[in-house]
Length: 335
Ligand code: 3HC
Image (cartoon, rainbow, N blue to C red; front, top):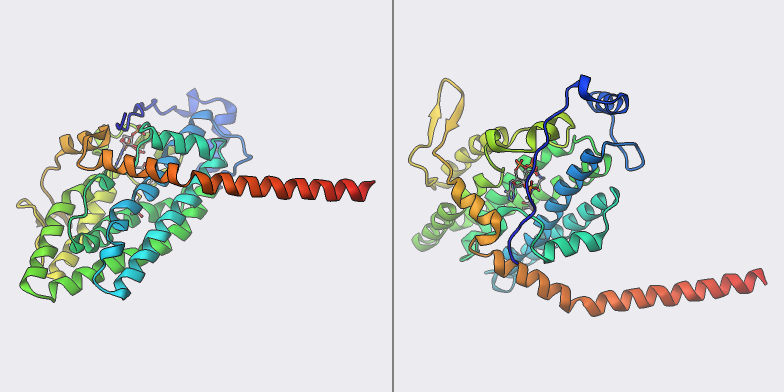
């Protein structure tokens, strides 16, 4: 049950000759950077691709609250605790904006929640790894939120209005998240030898999974070509991964930490870092539901859903009571 089993399928991108007149007009709007809004006509597969991507993104934010939420009660100081609490709440907020953006495409919140809880929906691979020490909270903020920003800043320009607008707000908050993670890492590396060793250990464990967050290599990314034609994605997975490596290595140097990659080398000719091979078997094992924490994450979400049932029931009952009162008041007024 706890496997993220949505089947991957990528349709071939249509040439202008293969498109209908309506599809050509739609593509022309996208090429002219005119946003597509919920009531506009859109190809069915554009709508489905957006639902898939936005809902996976929303689930990632919601499941992403778990690894860090795990440390709220154990944060080393009151200040760190308040910051972490605010950050985890932000992630919950991001999930809610994104579910709302997906709802504008005709899917209900209940359908998306059911897909997540049953293990059918995907969410980011990264959240299936455990946060073992406080330094992991630093590494998650620095690397995971750093990778998330790299991917999400271009999405502010995506073609679908509600998703693009949600991304503008989300990116502002992610930037604070990344800084708080780097700040934790700075404090750790300036601390005792043991603290510096914890920071290095966290980097060792989070580095490769962070690179996997960008998705499979371009030659096996089934959705990229069509999503880029529709500006649902602005960059390829490999482009963003390379930008992330180029941006992050100087930060690791500044921290005095070393990235666990013996093949990492600055390439003068290309003006980029070359890096070692990513273990794609590990990535596919994780997204098929067999990572270190997949079961634990889905168990936690299912438990939270059950424990929150009385709140949903109470708010619905309250809304129904008020709707009844409003109805009786307007009936009395008409009579
Ligand atoms: N984890 C899980 N599944 C992944 C994945 C990852 N890191 N990367 C790719 N996949 C899945 C895809 O969802 C797709 O599966 P599907 O067909 O069943 O839906 C399959 O692998 C093939 O990959 P593609 O490259 O063809 O898929 P996409 O074109 O959708 O690209 C993506 C993947 C780059 C993640 C893209 O969907 C995207 O940009 N999404 C929006 C951003 C997002 O969801 N980020 C998740 C992290 S959010 C976050 O980290 C929160 C923060 O607060 C820290």
